Length: 177
Length: 245
Picture 1 (spheres, each protein chain N blue to C red):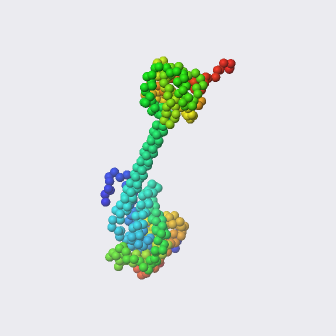
Picture 2 (cartoon, rainbow over the protein chains, first blue to last red):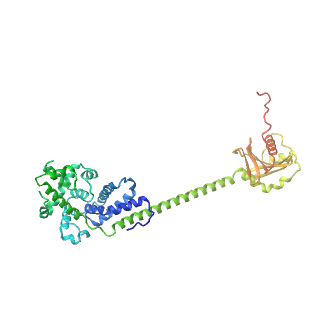
Picture 3 (cartoon, chains in turn brown, purple):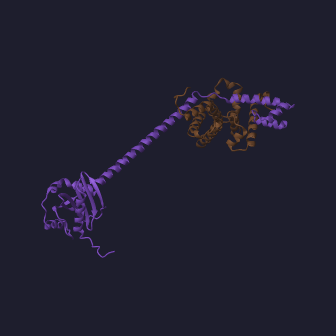
């Protein structure tokens, strides 16, 4: 979509470029964090609104994604605090979101998604930060206030658990040693 | 690096480009390269699976929310500025009205406002007797303590604004100079003024306030003489300095 005005200010241009470049990854991260499509949309929208208000604190383009992910995690934590009594355990009751209504539902990707949804938060979140956010162990450790070694263990176990859940498919792919 | 360490690291960070890892992968004869390949394929699948379809219009909705919020903020700021500007205008208007109200009640304003009804008195030339002049002061319960100036052509009990006054006209060098003496008014600050075609000066005296007025262009010496004359008459002659060092 072309910009609305040709003479928008640099801040607005930077913001629009950031939204276009990173909203997809951020939405996907939000989805895997919240496991809910509409919550993920709200989180992304709120994250970008907060980012707009604090855009001057963003120093370089490279750090934009980790910065946004940090904001989104904080928003998610806030949302969780507000809706503490409304939440239900989703491990065995994953809703039929549009994301899962695709033809891939019956394929390998759907199995991986199902397995991903069954991962405990402590494994799913760092894994999504790594795979979708492109963050290293050190960056995840900094963002989650953990030691890098602990994050590495979580990432290792996350993949192991996924392979366990995927069973034979993972074995066929050699995921198991 | 041994195979166990390599597989543990690759199991956590399959996409790592750590040279140490890559070197082990390329040199290991125990199947670490195949392990690395399988890990890459697993993460390829994982990335593909996690890349769920995006909701339609996601970017546009985000930009719309930001633009709407920004517009609302700007409107709010504009309203705040307008309210502030209106407050400043109202404050200035209020201060102006207060100042004007204050000015209209000032002694110079009251003295000058008193004059239009007394313009005929300025054309009188026949001197009044001392008794007539004293009677004018007696009417305001005031006794003169010194000799009155010569050439008094008019005396009358008046009211200047709220202040009871003795209205006098003294003709000095053929120029009429008005003196308004307000006994009991003790809070006057000495000063001069020009207002509505009149030049004047106000001064506190021992028992009240004296305002001397002349039409613009009157000589300063005539006003000085009238001021000195009435000051001496009302307060008494100035003490003699003879004998002092």
